[in-house]
Amino acid sequence: MTGPVPGAEAIDPDVDLHVPAQRAERQGPVLAAVSAGGVLGALARYAVSLAWPAAPGAFPWATFGINVLGCGLIGVLMVLISEGGRRAHPLLRPFLGVGVLGGFTTFSTYAVDFSRLLDRGEAGTALAYAGATLAGALGAVWLAASATRALAGRVGR
View 1 (cartoon, rainbow, N blue to C red):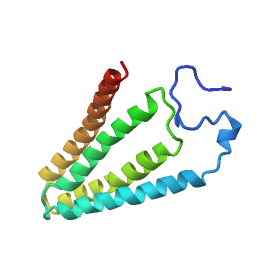
View 2: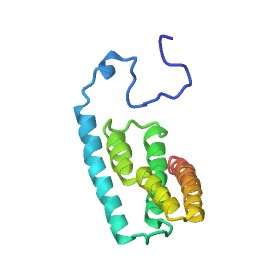
View 3: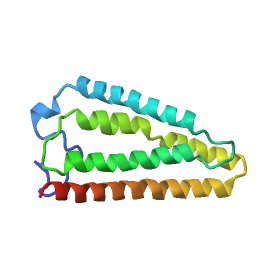
């Protein structure tokens, strides 16, 4: 294959690897944007976890809320920067999407919370947490993206 498939979405819409200049672009600014955003997102997640701690064996509401909210915000962001026909700054998605929201959401803590619940013999809570997080995160992305598309369509008229 010599080029992108017509009608297919690019893996990374910010970079077309078929364009030599983009393939050879310097990654320093992208890494700096991801790092700076990651610090902000992780600090926000830590603040939420301090403000809303979970008792041992209890449903981890803070991690659940963080992941559902973060997934919803990712849905909004991706619609705004990928579907509007407008060209976003090339560092916006790495900073906000990968950095801030990637640092804010925490599926590693989700896995640790799940494991700890199982270790404490709270299998029902662990399974409810696993299922609710999956449904909540996927639902949040879909709902937020759909609402953003609908609102953007109204504003664009």
